[in-house]
Image 1 (cartoon, rainbow, N blue to C red):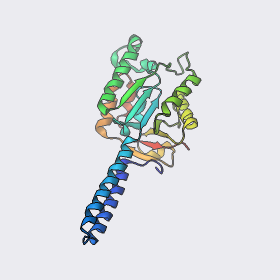
Image 2 (tube, rainbow, N blue to C red):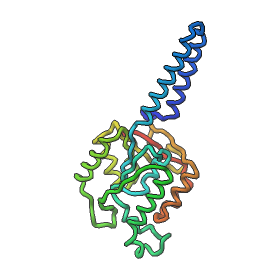
Image 3 (cartoon, helix red, strand yellow):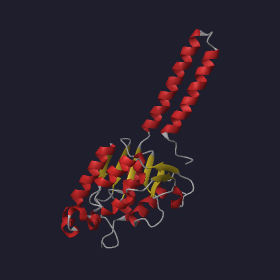
Image 4 (cartoon, helix red, strand yellow):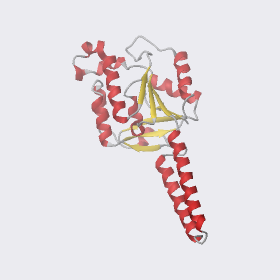
Length: 245
């Protein structure tokens, strides 16, 4: 991906510079203080750049708990996650807990507990807002103006903002968040979308490929017991990250 600089790539560049600096210092060894000075400056440069990378503030804005599946490989303590709903309409998929109709009254606490377990495993902080979960069966809708204002407020505090990319047949709340971010802060926005076998199936040309780590994928799927639909994702291969086009 052209504009998404990874920490790994940065380290490779720094290592190259370190090698070149060391070679230069070796040829000038007759100047005793120069070698120490150059090494000191190289260390200072590396520490400064690493600090800038680590200090980049990142967040993700999602409609529901479990949407972070689309950015699974970047989940760690450096990212804050905001769920606009509690995913209460997901009660229809909660067969693992019994009759979904019986589980319905407890689904919010169940899904929030699952999100807490996932955040603890990956190390990220998370927050919930109380917008209604909306799908084709529900008779409610969220307030687009309030949602947009909240997204503006959240994104203004971060350097990068992740969400689900608006491709395929995505849930319309996913689409709304993606399009709002594209309008509000396209330069900060990074989209994520999973793929089953090959990233080319997403239809996106310019992307960073992020293969799933098997143990993380299995933990994530197992932790979402309330969403039986997640079981089918256990064999998925990865996700992509891409910028608004």
